[in-house]
Every structure is written in structure tokens, then in C-alpha cells.
Length: 541
Image (cartoon, rainbow, N blue to C red):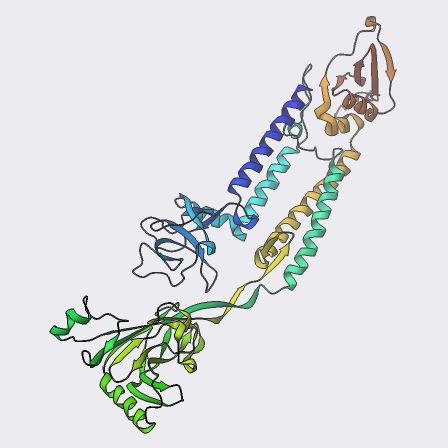
């Protein structure tokens, strides 16, 4: 009785420890707080090497210098790199062994987590266990272990419990009372594997999809001017900076620069385009005049920079001429510096094209003053773009996505999990084959048990309950109550959480249970052995 309580307690303890470890270290497929990644490349050497297994702790905030993991937007692969900085709420990642930063800049919410633990080269073993080629030897080893457990027992010595190897491990004996249940479970597994396998083999192993690859076009304006020495301290105590007002009497010539940068696309992608730079001067009546600073010029790559000298007196001359023609009817003018970009290229085999038109404006007060306009007072409604809402009128960004075709493994949803079809095919084949073997062995075990004589059948099916002992002496005055079947004696023993005593005699086998002044007895009388008369020796002359 105490042995059963001990076994139940240990089983409950181990189960509780397993559940606790799973909740703490459960992999990401079950939404646990820890996931694992097998390092595939050399971008993080010498810290991480190919074949290392790293544990990723989910929900941890990353800072500069820490190693984290995120999913690449292009192909959904997990990247394990170090955070080198934070820009605009986005993390900048870089491999320790790389000379460039990563294209993707995920937010904290998009990061999988922080690297928590590293096991050198353990990832190779995990990858091998996940491969279909490892399923066959593992299943074979388990099958061999099962067959070893269910071998029939050896006859015990007097005074010892008849315990089969199976009962020592709490494993159902082959041909025992629980064998029909095992056969039923194995049959259900075969049917389930057949149904799931049919769906897995009818579905294609791969499916076509798309992934949205984000990219950003950035344009930055800046200007400086050569100032006379006598005017510098009077008007610009710290020198002329981008955004300062302009006075033609002091700064008639302006050095205007524009820098373009395309982020999010790899340098290996074929990208380029055509760029123009010009000034547009307008008034409230619709009059306008265009001064070209750079005609349409082709560029290649993801960035370029251009600087042009602008004669502000030329712009003011056109405004004065217009006022003279209209007899001074208009006194409100604006001049905008506009960069017109037509970007095009090929990214992952997909042709893309996009337009980007950053600009900023000056408010002009003829004949001498020009002030930079703020986004709130933007006059050039015809040039409106998302960049006009930015606080800095000289800095513009234009975000967009390009859909990249992607061929990815097809998956099938089983309860709460999505399993790749390829792995599912191998899995159902292995599980179905193993279940068929178990069912066949069980059926053969039942047939073998039925073919045995009753004492051998009892020892095979109920060996764990039998204890070898001597039948009580008649002088003990215990009432003898005979039962019709051995199963009745087993029920009595299990109700009392006891064992069945057993005595093997040359003429019979006695199975009994002593309880409350009585002996419950089931006896099997063995047939008498046939006597074989010896043959007379044959004499050969």
C-alpha cells in the first residue's frame, strides 16, 4: 500500500516539475516566455558561432550594446544581432562581424526578445533531432525498449513477490488486462494519423505569398552664405545657419545643398532614378516663375548629394518686374526650393518606382527680405506632401512598402499549433507505423495469452499482484471461502489495496487472500502427468 502512495507522490511531483519548467522554458510555438534559436551564420563571431543554441527571453526591453532577436521583414527569418543604437523609437541592429548595419529597424514591440543563454554547438544536436532522419532510429529504440519491458517474467523463489519487469516500471504486461485498451488507443492513433496524413499529402508542401518590405526616402536641405565681415556681428551673431532669414543686401548669393538617401533596400539591389532641383516663386493670384538649379540628372545607388549656388537677386528681379506690370497689386510672395525625385529599380526581382518631392519655402518681402515659412503657414498647396506636416521644414521622409513574392513552407493547423506540411507527413508516417506495430503486438499477445494454460495466464496478466507464500495450516481455524474465478479474488485484493498470495504445489496452484478470519481461495488442480512405461530394450543379434 505504501509503495503505491510513494509511486503516486513521485509521479505527481515529477509532473508538477515538468509543468513548471514548461511554463518557464516553454518554446515560442506554445507562447512560452522563452524561445530558442540555432545560429546559422558567422555574423556574430566571435561571440556566437554557427551551430550554437541560444535561448531568447521574451518581453525584455533592449538597449544599446545588448544582443536581441527579431524577425526579418523580407523572409521572416529570425536574426540575432547586437543593438548599436536607437533612432526615432526604432532599434538599429548590427552583427559584430559585419561592417554594415541591418536593413530592418524594428521597434521594441516587434523584437522577439533578449539573448539569455548560450549553449555552444548544442544547436547541431537539436537540429538533428528535428530532422526526419532522426525519427526512425529514435522510434526503433523506443520500440525495442517497449519489447524489453513486456518480456514474460521468470518464476519466483518461495517467499518473494512475482513482479514482472513491466510491473517494476508500471508498464502494462503484454496480453494483460490493459492490452485491449492499448490496442484501442493504437487503433485510434492509426485512424487519426491516416486522416491527418491524407490532408497533409493532399496539400502542397509550399505556398506562394508576399512580404511587405518597407523602405524610406529621405531628403535634407541646408544652406549657407558668405557674409561680409562688417555685417556678420550685426545680423548673425553666430553666423548664418539653415533656417535664418536672408537679406539680399548682405547675402545676395546662397549655397544650397540637398542630400537624398534611400533606406530599407539592400545595397545589392539595383536602384537609381532621376533627380531635379529648382526654385518656384508664386503669389496669391497664381503667377509663378521657375528657376532651374539642376536639370534632370540620373543617379544610381541609394544616396546622392548636390550643392548649387543661388543668386537671390535674380529671383527678386522677377518679383519686382511682376509688381511693375501689375502696378504693385500683389505684395505677398513665396519662393520654394523643390527637389523632384523619380526613384526606380529592381528589388528581389520586383520592379519598383516611386516619386518623392521634398521642399521648403521662404516668404519674400520685396525688395530685400526672405523668411523661412513654417509648415503651419505653408502656402504652396500644389506641392503638398506628407512631409509638410513635419516640424522641421528642411527634413523630409516618405515611407512606403513594396510587395516581394515569397515561397514559404505550407502549414496545417492542428488544434493550437501550425505545423509545416513536410514535417507533418514524416510525423504521421512514423506515428502511424509505430501505432500499427503496437496494435499488432497487442493482438498477438492476447492470442498467445488465451492459448496458455490458466496458471501461466494468471502469472502473465497479474504477476504484479502475486506474492509467493504458504497456505495457512488447517490448525489456524480460518474459514475457507472458495471463489469461482481468479478475477473475483483480484477484485477483493484491489478493494483492500493488498496482494494475492500464491502457493505452487506439484498437484495444484492455490491463490488466496486472508481477511477478517477467513481465507478466500481460488484453486487450480493440475492434471496428473501421464506415466510412460519404459520400452523393452531391443536386442540386435
